[in-house]
Length: 147
Image (cartoon, rainbow, N blue to C red; front, side):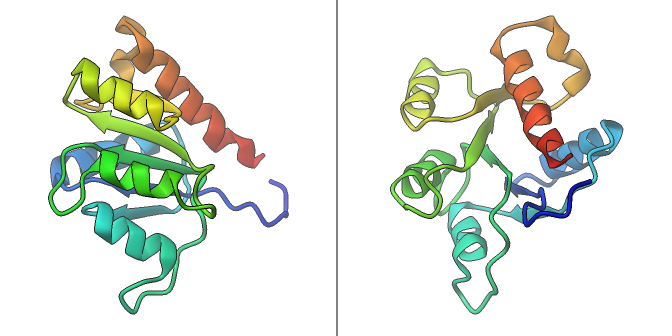
C-alpha cells in the first residue's frame, strides 16, 4: 500500500439499518477493509463532510454510497448540494435505491453519479443483469485505487 495522503474511505448515507448491515457484510465478503462512515440522512452527511454541528469533518471519502429515499434531506437533494460545492463536486457517488424509476435515473445521471445500484444489495446477483453490474464493478475498482 502506498503511503501518500490518499486514504480510501466510504461514506454510506442510508437510513435503513438492514441496508447498512447488508453493505457492511458485502464489503467484508469482498475483503474491502476501509473506514466506513455512516450518516442517516443528507443533512447528517453534510455535517460529517463539512464538520458542522460541532463535529470534526471526516476526510474526503473515496466513494459515497447514497440512498435516494431518506427523511430530512433525500439523496438527490444531497447530491445536488454536493455537485454545487467546489470542495465536493468531484466525489464518486453511487446511488443505492429500491426505486427503478426512470425519473430518478435521469436526475441521478444529470448530477453525474458514478453508478446506480438497485437494492437489495446482494452483490453476488450482480452478474444477472443491467447497469448494476457496471456500477458495482466500478465501485470496487475505485476502492482498489488505494494500491
